[in-house]
Every structure is written in structure tokens, then in C-alpha cells.
Length: 441
Ligand SMILES: NC(=O)c1ccc[n+]([C@@H]2O[C@H](COP(=O)([O-])OP(=O)(O)OC[C@H]3O[C@@H](n4cnc5c(N)ncnc54)[C@H](O)[C@@H]3O)[C@@H](O)[C@H]2O)c1
Ligand SMILES: O=P(O)(O)OC[C@H]1O[C@H](O[C@H]2[C@H](O)[C@@H](O)[C@@H](O)O[C@@H]2CO)[C@H](O)[C@@H](O)[C@@H]1O
Ligand SMILES: [Mn+2]
Image 1 (cartoon, rainbow, N blue to C red):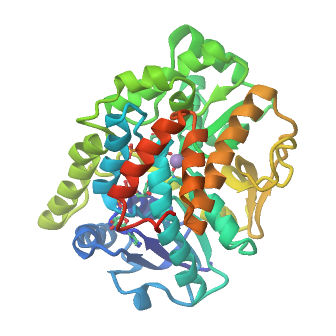
Image 2: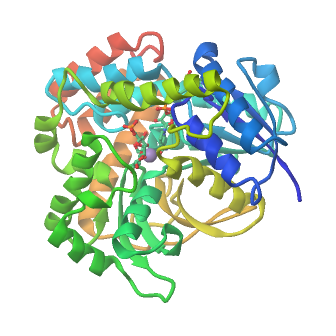
């Protein structure tokens, strides 16, 4: 059985321990010859790299593992898969993405609204460079990308590398929602044959077929309307996530035909959500005080004690497992169904062909074989076209260094709307991002 060479870019990610644990759990179905981690932050990655050595000694002694900040060591010709999970500017910039808009009376969030715009303008630079670094050594490696905002990264990479068919942008949110639905319906997430459409962090489930072909969505809708969605979240989540999942009930009550991605709360109820966000303590701070602190302290403890046996860093294996089962489906031409981000090209027949839509696809060794969705109703078409225009203008603002297109993008975003507010927020974000964005004229 072939063993694969994997490169993780962003080894210092808070999500890496969960991914490493998933790699151990799946070593029989997805055997790895060599795992390399690469990061630009030596100290951050070292704490996770040394944790990995203890974990692999106990659970995966045959794996060749090393971590590096040296590109020549990381990017080699024999890589089979690159798992990308970088955060350009780190949590310091995520905090600014969230606080700067909030202080100006606009939604501040990691991937949505002006925060997502700012994050996208930073990620585009490093993600274009990443693809170039990989492709300089191998045209064959699959690049599976988690780096956010995946919606904007996907549009940018499609524009810059239109002929590269081995780049796949993915998101764990639809997978996590299927896990939550499964908990409510006593099903496994892999039992669902879902129909989904939208953009990343801006989509809806229209059908949830079970193995007998029964659509379970109507039953689930009734459960949500009667009991809410709060208990369904698959992982133990911070309060902000429990509040987010709780908003699903209102979205289903207002627009009952489909089940929404939780991120739609920011676009449908910006006024209501804004009142819940604290400009002094945002999600970035919650993660710094929660997951980031917990992960690195536990990695240090594992290194100190020399065993990972009672490590608690693996809190959300959905994230780690999802990228692996997508890679497995490619590696073994399994054709398993996953919701991934792809060029539309008519899949949603009344959306632009160049939109990067999130739909269900059969994942094969020749890439995704997507399921067509067909025509979507006016309400969803209207929302998505506005959001896609925002995404496209953001990428064009970056590639052309255009202030006007940046202003147009923010003005189109449903969390901003006013061109006066858009200019105010844009100018503040420009000032905060001088080390990362191209000059906008
Ligand atoms: N697609 C999804 O659904 C999904 C789910 C969870 C997290 N994410 C994304 O995964 C990424 C990691 O999340 P996190 O919270 O663990 O962030 P993190 O800040 O903990 O880790 C990111 C790592 O990337 C490194 N990095 C930054 N720029 C780099 C570059 N140019 N090359 C290599 N490494 C670089 C940083 O040094 C850091 O160690 C973020 O982009 C996050 O939004 C995506
Ligand atoms: O605020 P964070 O850093 O905890 O999470 C941000 C990421 O949130 C989503 O991933 C969620 C998933 O959707 C949710 O259901 C939960 O169970 O786990 C994941 C991580 O919290 C989103 O898909 C990512 O793009 C965000 O980066
Ligand atoms: Mn996501």
C-alpha cells in the first residue's frame, strides 16, 4: 500500500494537534511515509513540533516526521498533499480585524464583513506565494487549503492560477453542521447525501437525503423550530459559538425553505448581532484565552511529561479528520461526497460562471466531480450575487491596488451598506495593515 508524503503549512496552528491526532487515528486507511510541518514562526511551531514527536513515538512510530522554517526543506518534489492552514498576521491582526470595524459601529468578525475583507487582503499575498513555492517543485501535489477567508482565497487562486486543477479550498463548517444534524437525527455525518449551495460561509442545505433516499431536512426543520438548535453543536463550544448556533432557529423561522450556514447571521441580522459583540473582548480574545492557551499549555505539558496519553488538545477532531478524508478520497479514487469550494461553471445555473461556489461533490483522484444544483430562488440569488460581487471586487482591489474597488467591495457588503461607513472603515483598516496589503490608490 502506497505511503504518502504530506506537508502541513502553518504547523504552528492551534488546529495542528487535532490534525496530528487524526493522522494517527487514520494511519491504516491513509498511511503516511513522511510528514513535514512548515511555519514562519519558529517558536510557535516548535511547541507543536515537539508535541508531535511525543505523540508519534507513542501512536505512529513508523512515520518520518520533522518540522522546519526552511522553505528548501519544506517544499520538495515528492510531496503528495499540502495541507494549508496559515494565518497571515496571526491573532494580533485577527483582533484588529474584529475590533476596528466594531469601534466604528460595524460587524467585526474573522471571515465576514470588513474583518474578512482585511483578512482576505492579507491572505491573498501569502497564498499566491504558497502555490508558487509548491509548484516550483511539483506540479502533482494536491494543495488542500483551509486558510481563511476561504471564499476570498478561492476567488483569488482561481484568478491567478486558473489552470491549476490540484488546488481545493475547503471549510469545516458544513461538515460540522452535518455532525450536528446527525446528533439530532441519530445519524452519522457520512450517512447524509446533502444538497448544498452558496459561497463559503454563505450557503444553505436544501436537502439531507438518508441512505434510503428520504429527505430528512423537513423533520430536522421541525425539530429546530420546536426545540432550537443549541444542543446540536458537535463540540463543546465557547459561549459565542453556542450563541451563533442558537441563531439558526431565527433564520429557519424567517426563511424556512432551507437550513442556513451559521455565518448568515452576520448578513441577515447585522443589527441584532452587532448588539451582542463586545468591541473590548472579541472572538480573537476568546480564542487567545481559550483554545490557543489550552493548546499550547497542553503541548508544553506533553513535552514535559513525555506522554500524550491524556492530552486534551484534541477538542475538535472534525477539523483534523475532514481534510484527511478528503485527501483519502483523492488518493484512493474513492469518490466520497463532500461539500467543497469549486468554480461554478453552471452548477448553480443562475449564478455567474466564475463564482467560487460551495456545493457537494464526489471527490476522485481526478478531482471533484460536482453535483449540479440548478436554478436557485430569487432571494438566494440576490444575496449570493451581492456577496460574490464583494468577493470579486476584494480580489481585484488587491491585484490592481485599487482603492475604489476596495471601497466598492465594502459598500456592497451587507454588514456595511453605507459608502460613508465603508470609507471610514477602509481607511482605518489600511492604516492597520500597512505591513501586509499592497498600496491602494
Ligand atoms: N477553512 C475552514 O473552515 C477553517 C477552519 C478552522 C481554521 N481555519 C483557518 O486555518 C488557519 C489557522 O487557524 P488558527 O486559528 O490555528 O491560526 P494560528 O494563528 O493559530 O496558526 C496559523 C499559523 O500560520 C502561520 N503562518 C502565518 N503566515 C504564514 C506563512 N506565510 N507561511 C507559513 N505559515 C504561516 C503562523 O505562524 C501560525 O503558526 C486560519 O486561516 C483559520 O482561519 C479555517
Ligand atoms: O472562532 P474560531 O477560531 O474558534 O473558529 C473560526 C472557524 O469557525 C468555523 O469552523 C468551526 C466550525 O464551523 C464549527 O462548527 C466548530 O465546531 O469548529 C470549527 C472551528 O471553531 C469556520 O468554518 C472556520 O472557517 C473558522 O476559521
Ligand atoms: Mn470555514
